[in-house]
Image 1 (cartoon, rainbow, N blue to C red):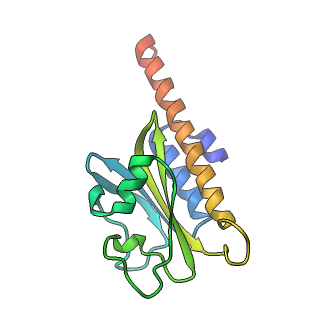
Image 2 (cartoon, rainbow, N blue to C red):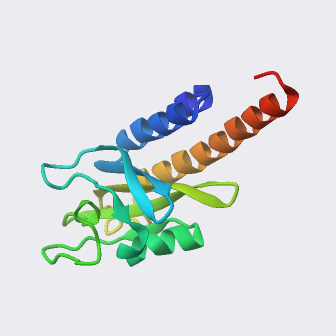
Length: 161
């Protein structure tokens, strides 16, 4: 949270978000929304051949749904069966649970964060604690991005840039 608060650039905020989420979840991918695509920005924890790649938003209904409704969505474990509508990096390993979380700025989704980690919901009621912590980080990053964007706009309009 402190790194997010201290970041003063868009890149700094996204990097702090990626690092913070990476400290909570087993695998993390921060993907930037670029028109009809999401583009790989930063990731960690993915094995060879499973790294995120740029994909068309409409190629994965779960992804397009998250962007459309601007709400976090759980990605259940596929176990041994592979879901063909999900990109390889979003196929949650057995015993894990995944989550897609939109990063919203001014009611627009500018990035999507994919995370997965151990599924503890069988032992405890509700989502695993790490998932809630990552969602709080993403929401805080959204607020920071809005603040930095507003500050830049004021600087430009007042001529103090």
